[in-house]
Length: 121
Image 1 (cartoon, rainbow, N blue to C red):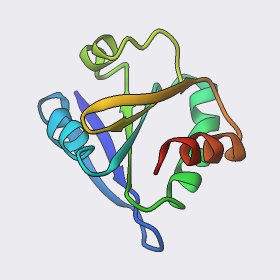
Image 2: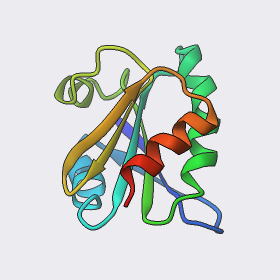
Image 3: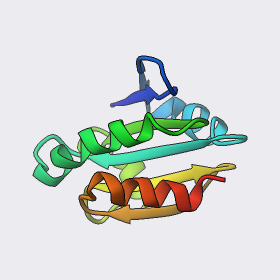
Image 4: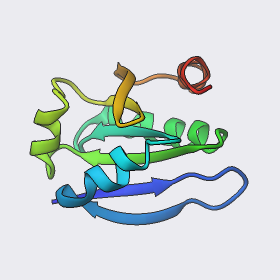
């Protein structure tokens, strides 16, 4: 059971790190203290998930103080259950250890940008 973690930093290449269920709390919940973590719950067979991914990555790279994480719900069913994922793609924004906002479905770039601007202070 692995998570794919992408830390997005403005003006830099994305750094990749593999996670598993045992360190999700450390890398998502703890990292959301003092910053934001955007979590994309997805699956490789989900066409809307595959369409959303490049838009999420592109827009997330525009925001300072934002980490971007992809969770394959097929490989991480416990996390899918814990965060009540009923439909994918499901995107949740974490701050201070809590989900502060979310959306389900594929959004265009501007929709994602508006979602993040509304929430990131």
